[in-house]
Image (cartoon, rainbow, N blue to C red):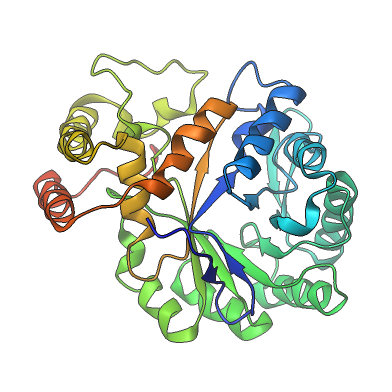
Length: 323
């Protein structure tokens, strides 16, 4: 993979092809995440040259992800590309609340900056549209925060094509963040071409699909109710087995290339047309170092062809999440 930073849309900024998604560091879906572990995981990313850190106001009930980043980047903030999100918060009982009111967005950004110990975000996303608030109104708030210097550029996450168009018209976005991986490629049909035409960067999350594509899951794996993956059709029954059949195709190419399965997956994702940066999660420094090795993983035409044929043989996948 070419590790050269890539233009972030028309913002004049650039990001590396890999970034650290800091949601797992909040400890809300994983056990055993201490503040020290979270800090050391972020520090390991920086040491490996992964300088794009992606967090959000709601990554932790008390900003645990942002606080870990602050501890890790102290003294090296100027070398880090820091992306944050606003528009989702937690209410008592871990009830997630989407709130796109301008006053709420401004409050969250101010708190995020305090937690992070910085005076600006490099990229600020609206985390998700609020159905009760016009999208243009929410994006107008982000535009004003950018104009005030609290964010160098703005973007939007978790949107469809029409919402993407509306957000861009309202605020001139630099990036959109959406799920994308070998088995979930819906955005290739319309969103990626639109972004390429309008010079909007695409930042992909879930490249390893919650570990499914990392090559470490046993076929008899059962996810307990405490693990959110039990809600996803991709992780159960025949769907799970077909997905693991596809992982074996990737494993074969990884062995031939001398790379880890996850590194082949990340390298493939990062080289897809229109994909600017790919976010991977980690809960320990060793995981970061393993995934950062994707920067040294170079795919050849044989690997690309095998993966393409494997995707075609796998066929359409089940819905992203159970109803």
